[in-house]
Length: 522
Image (cartoon, rainbow, N blue to C red; front, side, top):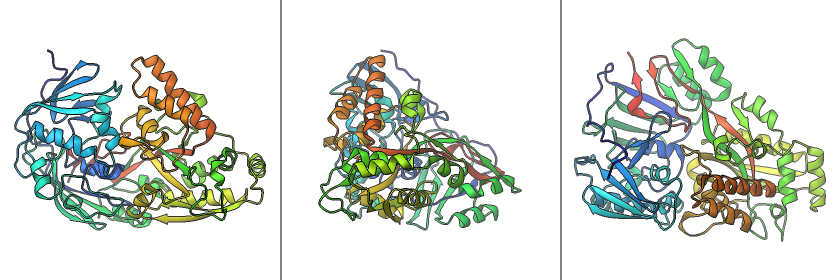
């Protein structure tokens, strides 16, 4: 047998500059330190500095060895992974195959936010202390990409702290893993103060190589746009992940600062409850206007996307009609990217045809500290939809309140973002577009719509072995989604990162700050 990757050399500390503290901020806090509880980008990105995966992402999102030094695909439904020897968790215990099999099964738990990805990995099976097999029930065309999303935890530590199952975040469960962690990663948790600050320290026993010089990381959530920018200008912060669009030009020209530009793999969109016979939060009684595709289409055609792009987002957005985090997900197909045209006259006509010529009222739930201008986008949409008689009440709330609410389907209309490191359509089709079912399928279909044709096409594409046939299935599924307007896509975010001029970072398209690569000068 020939392994696909050689083992990487063990850790040596970089001598690139003096050891430094990285002080950085974003508008909201991570949701939990439990790496399986939530599937939210900032939470995942920070937890990945503490917990690791068998395979990981490089600077250009390429798959690289992680806790596994090598692997091979023995057959279409059989993978084998060789673990690195002598990898230690932060408490000193040694990583073994038992920890890997336990973690994969833990991530499949109903309380897990990533169970749809863990279930796609099949059955993990220990071969020996440093070898793990995965036996799949059906072909998975993006197996390694799914594997890059499931973090490995220490089984004994989890048992000791009554955390063998993930934290049930949506039901506000209190668990040791919400505030504490024991990973194998390059950084360990030194202090956790929810919504105040979290401090991390470099793990001297890490197996890998530090390219940067950061010894300590202090993360501070700062909701106020003005305060985040002011703290950077004043030198109280070294890095801001999400500078407000209105401040970017000023920050770019400020002495001692710089801005690194990049487009994020993330689509911002509107979802609607298409299941209930009566909406929870609407003036319409005994029926649900969102069940009518004409209403959904009217809302889409009432969105002045150019005004959102140029005025509100200051050009830091790429409008699209595809519910896909990147054009790669739809094979750069211009027809799938095409938006329904902005046409308020046609939108009013559609509303009248559907029996809502006089309009109706509805509540739009929206986070106010998760995406770029999230609350402002909702307010702007409310004004646009008022022009066709839909009177929207914007219910904006912090992410820690918002996400449990949408996960319980306690919504009538909502704004959400979707994206990350995987550019394949599978991680949009299965969790976001399919009917809600077992194993995390449709877990993020918060509108709870059911479309049998879309389900069939998406399910077939998930296991199709022929790349050409698979592309046809994905495109057909996306077309069906667009025709039925199950969501209203808005734009893909453009994310400039702002920092002190003595800070060097790698800006990945998944908006992921990897601390082991950061250099902070004097």
